[in-house]
Image (cartoon, rainbow, N blue to C red; front, side, top):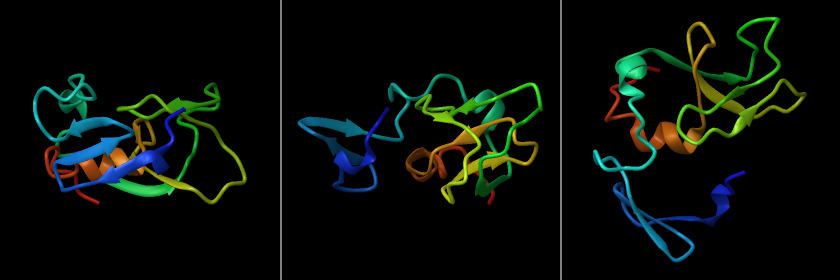
Length: 103
């Protein structure tokens, strides 16, 4: 599991994770795995995780694969209108302009 408390924001495009410098929002970013095919320009809502179907027990962030499950937690994430795709807040912030998301 990724601990976002270790991130140090240097600028909109540069972050440090421990001793590793990460440049964001470029086409060589390791987190970009063709998500633009299904996430570019979509409408997202910030909400508590909800299962897409009764047959599913969890989902994963489309960028970091962190696991989402239904709990009594008040933590919110970003999701497509149909609750099919879910995104962690740090990744939403990193890619909201690149993907032209509407909230």
